[in-house]
Length: 247
View (tube, rainbow, N blue to C red):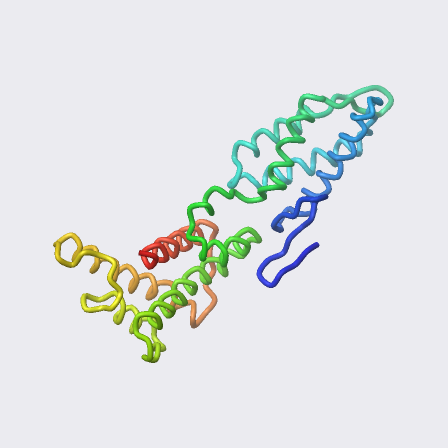
């Protein structure tokens, strides 16, 4: 296992992936797949006993249940594969369904390379993804959400220092927002000569103030529990704010 300050990684062969809650099952299933695949490469008959078959089906179903939200299609396919991977044979052994095994091989290798749905993170601002993605993938939804908002605050403080050099950065984020994003603020991100530009500026100011009042201030005083959905929503809001500050 390889660890860094912000995340943990699991190594499967030459592939290093982010840790998942179903790490052990995925690793054991991968080992079984590799052993069977090596046996198939030799052309020798593959003998699998009932205990091994039952254990393999158990591992497949654990992974299928764990990825139901991230990979719903794979989840359904894995359950189908589990039901069709083995056929009873004589003398307490089973035969392997080669077609089902081939599907299993591909799906598991893909999940190992992308243990969580990566597509959403390609749309998230890089700074937010860097701070929150590994935490989210490890199931720490509350930390992932809170750190996303804190990263926006860090960016606001950086902008204040850049645009008001020599002035002490206010301790309260509300004062920073006031100095940067109000009508007379020093950060210009819309055309104030037009009605739509002025409305947009006012709306963005309210958006920043509202998000920090709702999410940042309460989390400074207590640990807030987050569901997966709530964490995604907050991370996406933080990403939106960060892209606004990139303008």
